[in-house]
Image 1 (cartoon, protein in one colour):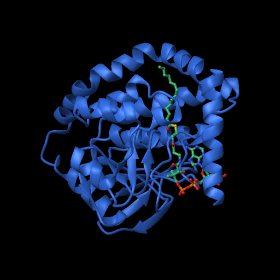
Image 2 (tube, helix red, strand yellow; image 1 turned 45 degrees about the vertical axis):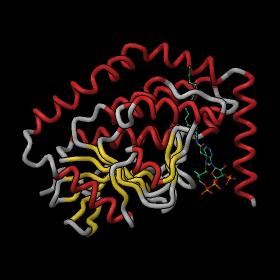
Image 3 (spheres, protein in one colour; image 1 turned 135 degrees about the horizontal axis):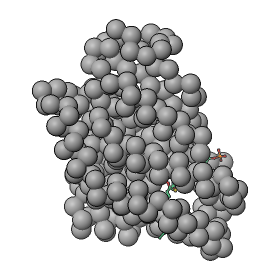
Image 4 (cartoon, protein in one colour; image 1 turned 90 degrees about the horizontal axis):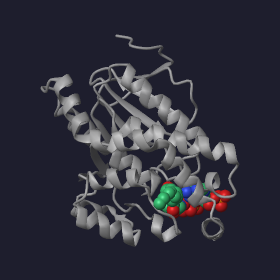
Length: 281
Ligand SMILES: CCCCC/C=C\CCCC/C=C/C(=O)SCCNC(=O)CCNC(=O)[C@H](O)C(C)(C)COP(=O)(O)OP(=O)(O)OC[C@H]1O[C@@H](n2cnc3c(N)ncnc32)[C@H](O)[C@@H]1OP(=O)(O)O
């Protein structure tokens, strides 16, 4: 049955996959007709850096999945080695004063929508997932990752600070002691380390297997009353969600103050240069 404007039909392992009406370019949503599960794919070359445009598209796509009665949402990337490189540092380095406000507000919106999503969520982490990438993954309820990649909140290594709500997602997955140490160290975990600490739930040998494992997780809710499940999830996550809702304006001002500090700008510039040098070598 067609549940939204259909743009194209693409066969997939589990059923017929319908590409939904995303008028956006940096994300796509495909709903499997058999399972009813939506796969939201980030597609912003080269590294799925979360800039204003990708954040806006993510927001729109999450909203679309919420609205189209999907049974669950799987977040993944079209890049074969990178889930997301986190926030696009170019948005924060020598920022435009209006755009950076929109950028941070869009990031808040994405977190509120994903962490607070009413449908079961899972991340098929098919590549590196630092900082903002880790935020997206830990906002989901389940994580399946491919071998030989890294994940973590590395902000302190960049001389920046993960806001409280980044920490909330991390703390919803890791024991407090582990989370505190990893955050202070800015530690990036390999897939194997992430599994042993509980930062991810499973390892898959291919993206296809990761998507299947995420679908299996979402399938575990098939016999659970959807309203009861969703209200339970929302009650469990309500404190953190409400805290950001209440403090959105202050959170934005704190970010602007911090990011505009000359020492922070200098650090971001050095980091960008080091990334560019690495890319050239
Ligand atoms: C108390 C109050 C607190 C208030 C808040 C204050 C501050 C705000 C904090 C906000 C929290 C920040 C969260 C973040 O997400 S910051 C971003 C962190 N991300 C990273 O550190 C990742 C950096 N990238 C990498 O490690 C690697 O690129 C990689 C993802 C592992 C992929 O490696 P590889 O495949 O080898 O690709 P390249 O390194 O060659 O990169 C290709 C090009 O992409 C550019 N790049 C990479 N990452 C980013 C990025 N995050 N932003 C912008 N650009 C990026 C890289 O420079 C290359 O560009 P080029 O081709 O032009 O040279």
